[in-house]
Length: 221
Image (tube, rainbow, N blue to C red; front, side):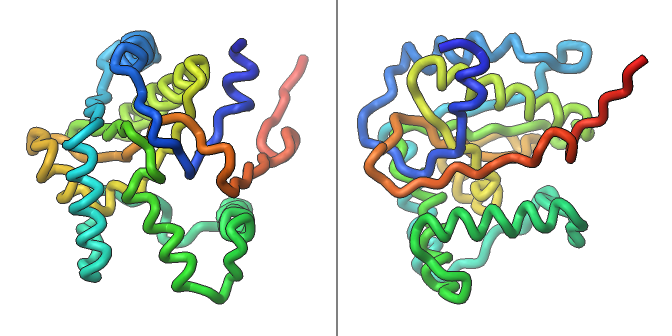
């Protein structure tokens, strides 16, 4: 698979099979992803790769919290601005319409939307997950470095025939994840990432992208 194919075939997959992901594959991906760029090569990412019984325990505890109506954890960072202006607001709304429309869930059926969203905390059935932390003392530039690292991981997973789904949703249950993983106190959970083989029989929707002239300015001599 060439680089262009890896980029265009990568998407947030929300249905995985139970087929295990080999440890050696994950090690190969993460060893190579370590070459992702970061300012002054400080490599601020701190991923935890979880499979088997520990991942099952995280899913179980998250499911119990959902079932009991336990509120989300106090946020440790702002996922979106309080007021999302155009065109970002419209893009986010369009994503929701496409995502839930593919599942046959109308806008007014909030209960069904919540059930669909709850699949986040089962990792959409994936047998492997990556929980990416960053030190609390890092700034916006280092958070951007973590984004480049995660994108590198996802493209390498595609090269291995795997799919993924990056999930900031896990930051809402960061206490539950920490109960199992016991990360150092100085780390903040940025996101989780479900990893596995796609269930090709599940309903899926590929969200589009804005046209080039809407996002890119060419300044030529």
